[in-house]
Image (cartoon, rainbow, N blue to C red):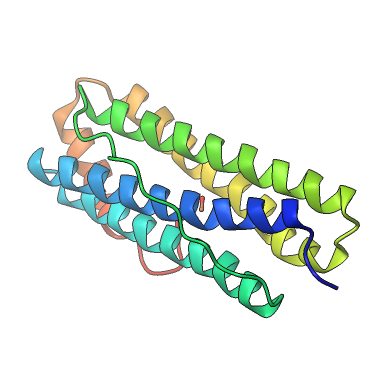
Length: 167
Ligand code: FEO
C-alpha cells in the first residue's frame, strides 16, 4: 500500500527534524567543550549520533515504502547558553518538540489506516519516553548540585562514561 501524500510529507519532515536535532546536539556539545566539561560534551555528541540514526530510520522506511525522500534545510542551531542547566533544558525542549511531531505522525497514520507504519512509530513513542526521562533526570541532578563544583565534576565524569546504545 502506498503512503498517503500527507503521511509521506510528515515522515519526510521528520527526517529533517531528526537531523536538526542532531545538529543542535552537536552545538550543545561544542558549548560544553568550551566550558571544560568533556564528559557532558561526549554525552551530547553521542546523542547527536543517535539523532542521525533516528533520521535514517525514517529515511529507510520511506525508501522501503517506495516513497521519495525529500530533505529540507537545517536552521542555524542555538549556540549560546547562560549555564549548563540551560543546555540540558534546551535538550529537553528539543525532545518535547520531537515527541509532539511523532504523536502528530501517529495521528496521521491512524487516519490513513496505515498499519504498516505502526511498528516504526511505536518504537519512536517508546524512545521519546526514555529520552525525555533521561534528560529530565540530568536536569534534576543539576538542580540538586547547583553551586557545588565537585558534584558537577562527578556528574561530568558519569555522563562521560556513556557508551554506544546506552543513555
Ligand atoms: Fe530523535 Fe531525541 O529524538
